[in-house]
Each structure stands twice: as C-alpha cells, then as structure tokens.
Length: 218
Figure 1 (cartoon, helix red, strand yellow):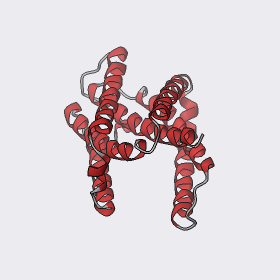
Figure 2 (cartoon, helix red, strand yellow):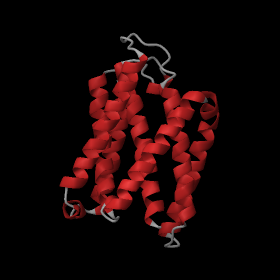
Figure 3 (cartoon, helix red, strand yellow):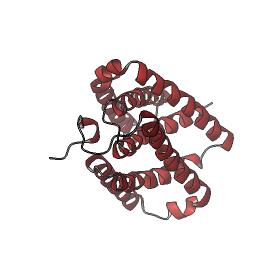
Figure 4 (cartoon, rainbow, N blue to C red):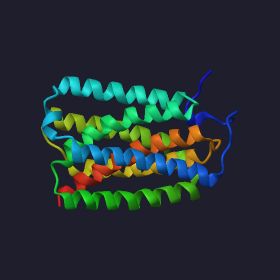
C-alpha cells in the first residue's frame, strides 16, 4: 500500500547525507522559482487572458492535483520531479497574472521579504518540530475558514478586507515551519527530498502572493 511522503517512516531506498538531502531540496525549489521567473518574463499576459476562465481554472486544478498525486505517491525521484513540474507550471501562470499588476520594485521587495521569512520559519521548524506538529491541525482549520470567508466576501459582498491577507500569510508561515519539520523527520532519500521541496514550494509561493498583496496596498 502506498503512503504519502510525510507518512513514510521506513524506506528501502538509498539513504543520503543530511547535507545532500538539503541540497536537493534547495535545488528543487530553485528550479521551481526559476521556471516561474522565466514564465513571468516570457509569457505575455495577453496569451493567458485569451484562455476562458472556466477552462483556465479546470486546467489549473487538474494539473495541480495530478502533480500532487504523482509526487506524493511515487517513490521514484524522477516521477516525483515530473509531478512537481505539473504544479510549478500552473502556479507560474497565476503568478504571471498577479505580478503583472504590481510595480517591479514591489515584486522584488516581496521576494526579499518572502525569502527572509522562509529562512526564519525553516530555522524555527528545525528548532521546535514538536510545536509545529501540534499546531498543524489548527493551521488547516484556520486556512479553510479564512478561505471560505474570503470567497464569501469576494463573490457575495464584492469586497476584500486586508486583514485576511495577513492571516493567510501567518498561516503559511506556520505551514513552512511544519513542512520543514516533517521533511527532516522522514528518511533522507532523493525522492523524499523532491517531495518535501514540492510541499515547501506551494507554501512559499502562497506566502509570496499574500506578501505581495500586503506590500502592494502600501
């Protein structure tokens, strides 16, 4: 029976050193961010806008869920990396649409702030893994509640309160610490490194988009 990446307590795969494990996580993250950066620079917004919103979001969710299924269930690092890219590309299209609305200086500031916050949360995740494991359930409930409130505000009341961006940013800070703690609690293999990077990538990108909105309002 296949289990999700963070439920793996044993493995028959080759174990690697901690430094190699962290290097693979870092390189996988850099790859995803580099692909997104290339997409922002080279894919015109107009070409994305020509896609009907219904088809766009169906394709977006289909690609993301397929990618998540691949990297979370596979124990082959190549298959997991392919799944990771099925997540990176649709995220890149969303990033492209959102980033185009902001001044480049604000985007760079958001990248810098996201990088610093991510480093701090990874450090805290390494120092206090038990704490992040305890709050994991609360983070999920809080995220679902905030998303529901945000959707109601947008589609029913046609408004959006900035405090929601702060709350979601804090929630994803918690997720970064949590996923980093989990990444260091499972066997250190090439596949687990790619899978862990994929989970962290989604946390970091969601944090970046919220920080961008917060800074953009200044």
